[in-house]
Length: 534
View (cartoon, rainbow, N blue to C red):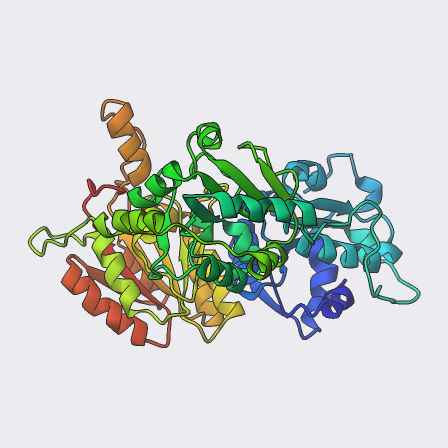
């Protein structure tokens, strides 16, 4: 198992020990692969996810059998929903005990079946090289995703006569299509020529395909205005003239307006979920839809696709750029730019309020960051404040867009920083989501992970509280966090520098100090409990 990971050039693995995985860990200890001890197994998957999204290589997470494996399920499901390549290795009880409900036994391959690309229960140690080769191939090709390898302890202790790692994975029936169909590309180009009001929608699939340069090149050549889903933030620099902003329930009004008025919508690697487009069929009735995705199951699932193109977005966009001769009417460009100019960012700081105004602070904070900074955001109000106001230029925006998993940002930031140690990594979280993962401060300390954490403290589960206010007669059920700790003292207990800000002026001054530090730093921002999401 260790030799397989070495053959795949794995350098870091994230995990938590247990008896059923000890034989593997004992050999991992003797290898050059760095093992990061997390404080809870779900966070092993989140840290591997952050590592994978920052590095572009599959992340590896490890857990023992039973509760160790089941704890990792939410992290695996989070990766599956956001198409993150992950290899989850779990220990299992001895083969002859399977199905007998012995100590720490759980059918983890069965439990994870709905949200893994594939899973293996290893029955013969000689199959391990083939299984690992296939697992890495499946996780990282086509539409990426997590693959689970469950290895009984007796298999880990078995002798393999000779180790031969396959050069290639040969999997019958698994041949992801990469080249877009020539006829469909021709139809798409013709539709672009005819369109009077085209819009390019950039989704997370563009990021996964490493197609940033191709999308920017095509957008520049064609002049087609660009919007993004939340998962597509950062592909096009947010200060680009023809970038209109994020669409969706919490998106920018001008971006949503441009999409609603378009006569041609080019969807690039977007599943068109309900948070991005509330009424997809209404859009399809008014506009022609070109849908590009590596996964044919996504095309037409949520919205009618008039011109479906299955293939690697990077290759399809390259074909578009090479073959297109699109001329977008100036009237349309003037219209969407007018919408953009009319949009005014909301949120003004008030030095007398005793609170940090989060939306304006996000804008100020982004101006302090390096251009290639990596931002991780949790779920809830903090996620929307960051997505709408943080100006991502050449960096990355990592968040749980599909499953919406609270507690994602802190472990993902740890993984991203270990993948890219020389880049700034900033974690944005609320006081609710932070408390779901704050045990990982131990991991931060143990391995000296230099991440910066902005903790928005409003003593509320803010987004759900807002829903209760609007739809449930202001009956705030379980959304008031009255038992919050003193976060500054908590950080001090871990030996991590922490500061508290109660105004934007104070927050900006402390943020500048935080960014100069070569160690982990937490900036707690006191936020008005009634501060709106948008």
